[in-house]
Length: 428
Ligand SMILES: [Zn+2]
View 1 (cartoon, rainbow, N blue to C red):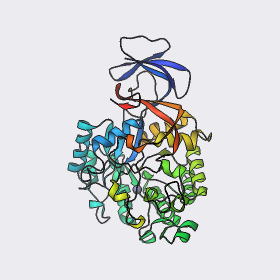
View 2 (view 1 turned 90 degrees about the vertical axis):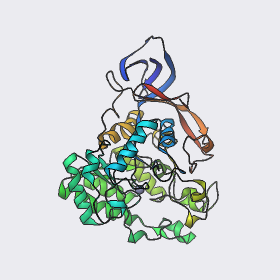
View 3 (view 1 turned 45 degrees about the horizontal axis):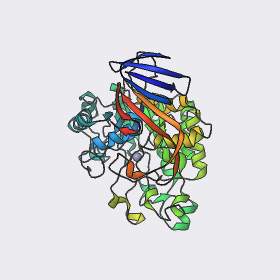
View 4 (view 1 turned 45 degrees about the vertical axis):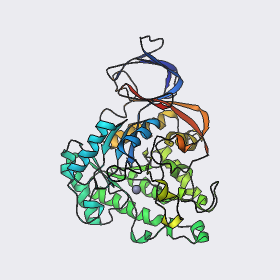
């Protein structure tokens, strides 16, 4: 098959010949019996998400492996890491293999299960990390995401344990006692609204401790959804020491602020903006953007967190935390990072494909688009601007904070090992 007229990382137009799931030839004027017109779209290596909640098993009313990976494909993703906070929790070889098999059977992209760090995410006893690593799912990323591994001894043991198979512990940094009952970012707005605050220090203190622990035992640490300017400073310091630490930021933390809880196009106290960690201040957003640009933060990860309507459309304090994000991630990154001149398309490819694949130790994903590479390809048209319409999402859930907002860009096509999963913006 020939993919005609695409611009790799925004460069000059070329054609790609795909054979046996691999890029076989790159050049102008390629011809073949079957062809797809790229229309001058930007070609990126298929996106890789380090942080997706697929909700299966247990909350199939919110999302399934099938709908979640359809959502991923529409967002330009060819691989996702499925978080462990399912029901049952993915804390055994049996459960991670179940998710992995669902991915093989129903996935519109590759599904790599994340293993829980502790049994039942309860923070009391290490889960069977080695058995998950040795299972068919070959787990390399371990996280209690949704909860913090707040016990320093358990965190140390987990960091030591995963070294044996080159794994990484991905920490949801949230000191639990400092955030008991927290409803939004602790600051001027929470004070005015009288909502219990989630202080920046509750994230920063855990990140600082974990960086020190990771350095002490010589292990790999990944920090999930960094949300504050102070966290950026700590990461910059830890990285300056040469420690093996990586970090992610979500699209929503690159664009949205806590003012939206007080005043927004959809009214005050709208739980669509309720998320963990919470939306922070403009100064935090600016620091996160600068950190993603200079490499202090390594990757963008969606924290795609689908919830059914009844869990979100309720009073603020009772609403579930989280936002869907797979189908808007690239557009939000274009808006926050490319339109502002902070990143070019090569930089986006690094942060949304190459480096996340490396952190997850994935082979066959996140490889530059060159001859011999697997044909995992995202075609993206950055020139259009469209209003976000959640009813068009492939995700089973609709809890997007961008409804009605005009965002740039559109995923035109996604190819998984040469097979189209999305063409002309629609699922194949
Ligand atoms: Zn989390």
